Amino acid sequence: MRIVLLGAPGSGKGTQAKRLQEDRGWPQVSTGDLLRDAVSAGTPMGLRARAAMDAGELVADEVVLGIIKDRLGSADAGRGYILDGYPRNLAQAEALDGVLAELNQTLDAAVLMDVPHELLMKRLTGRRTCSKTGKLLNIHFSPPEELQACIDAGGELLQRDDDREATIDNRLEVYRRQTEPLIEYYRGRNLLSVVTAHGSIDEVYAGLVGVLDDAAFAGRGA
Ligand code: AMP
Image 1 (cartoon, protein in one colour):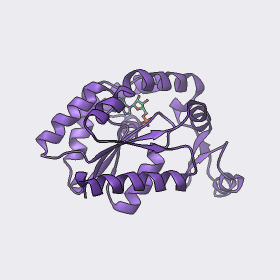
Image 2 (cartoon, rainbow, N blue to C red):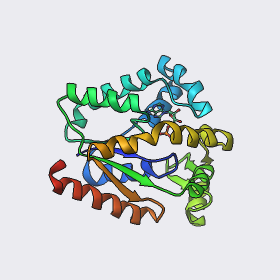
Image 3 (tube, protein in one colour):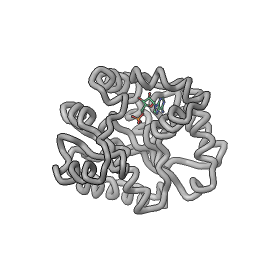
Image 4 (cartoon, rainbow, N blue to C red):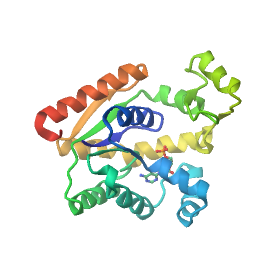
């Protein structure tokens, strides 16, 4: 299946996309991860992207489109993929339609991960990655023994640069202004499903799989 995951920063798109990738074999295509890799590697694209990312703004559409085109055309995306963090505004959604047409592909579903605003802030400010194991954790919600396991393994709990409070406010505002209109865009194409995304990871995943199976059953995908 070819899926767009929509949702505010902190709605759990990345966590759920990783799980879906493991379960179903469709690669997670996260523009945020691809941009962070480019920034770490110091590529020209990374240098262009960095200032916008640090400010919580969107990176220029043409930079992100270049990444997406390469990625969706690659061999492992042949059976499907999960777009996590793309598109993020109407121009990107229209550009994506163009790329799909070129590749002779169609989308099967756009899933909105719906989370109340108050929870997003806690999820984002608390989010950490274990430097040793790469595990995603949250200082507010992860069981203490999981946080301790990272420390005991000699790891550190790292915070993403753009998960600081001032940047988070801006990222949420950018989402509201630029990304939320995509909900209507995909509803109008009869592709939208909504998943309640404030339960446990397992509950949210069950909801996600449920709507994807419904979409596949409705003849939108396989
Ligand atoms: P994420 O990991 O999806 O929250 O993305 C982190 C940051 O990467 C965002 O705040 C943007 O600065 C940038 N970014 C990720 N995806 C896109 C996109 N589709 N368009 C523009 N900027 C993006």
